[in-house]
Image 1 (spheres, rainbow, N blue to C red):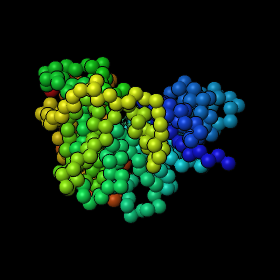
Image 2: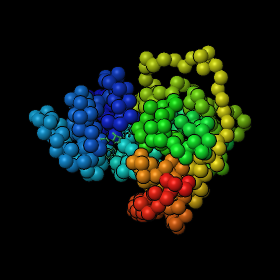
Image 3: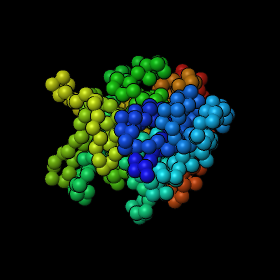
Image 4: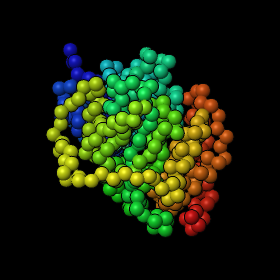
Length: 395
Ligand SMILES: NC(=O)c1ccc[n+]([C@@H]2O[C@H](COP(=O)([O-])OP(=O)(O)OC[C@H]3O[C@@H](n4cnc5c(N)ncnc54)[C@H](OP(=O)(O)O)[C@@H]3O)[C@@H](O)[C@H]2O)c1
């Protein structure tokens, strides 16, 4: 009998997915890859299937899934496609833990399916928590699976909170690198190119989250994620810019003690913690060398240059469907920026315009979040189309 932990990796061809498989490859005595899923990257998924031999491989794109099926020939692996395939991968037989690392709101479905099936979810896909955290994290459903956060900040907080008295938590200090434009003026940001926005100083990540880091929407989404994961009021969540990305976040307790988790900025650390939780896996990554780091800096974020932070706080305070609208409008605006349709500073404008037209309602069902997501995509898309050229020039 195979006693290894059965793993499904959703988003296996992306930055988090590849790092997850590299951790698994170093501990093949502990983990068995049972299902892999991606969007359309046939070459990379084929390579991963040949190496890790899952029982199920999914490409969301149906045509690409057909190519993959042909290429895998008589290898003993089933190939599936679409949202059904993605959700099947999330609850595939014998899976114990799902690495939810697809990018964007599509991650909501497989994440929800997995927790409902009682499986542990290592959650990188923050968008699903932003959209519908209160429907995914259900303390009233003890039979649902656990969420172990992968985002380095939330993973840090999760680690710090182990065996702590939760009622003694006073504040969470969520650290932020500040992204590639941390020290840029608004004038410089106005003409920022896609290439410049994709140059993150500390982390190597997929394009969407890298642009989110440049606008600091990533920290805004993480604030909502922390609010949902740790049930901390928005007022008790403080964003702290920390350019070195060594302190991954901190928790202040009501006796004034502040506990932090530190480490080198490498996603394989939180990924391995999430995969092995509650154990810790050894690795050969370099140790944190404080003598070469020398100094750690902390300062408050600039809400004027990074209006996405204010929009995220507003969405979190409003609650209901507003965070889903913020998230969807952001996805549309970031994509438009990546395609050269709008300039960098237009991203928050598109989000703000979409939020301003939305009347939030309570999230009593997943369909409500999905409808808000659909509406916001349409509205933000129309905004981009109608005034993309104008926004390019005026903001
Ligand atoms: N990268 C990081 O360091 C980091 C840190 C914290 C949190 N996160 C979060 O982790 C998630 C993934 O980020 P990433 O940087 O790894 O993104 P990425 O490099 O862009 O990878 C995205 C992955 O999702 C897959 N995908 C996209 N749409 C899909 C769909 N409809 N069905 C199935 N698979 C789909 C992609 O497949 P294809 O390759 O085929 O397109 C790819 O495997 C995001 O939510 C991000 O916010 C990332």
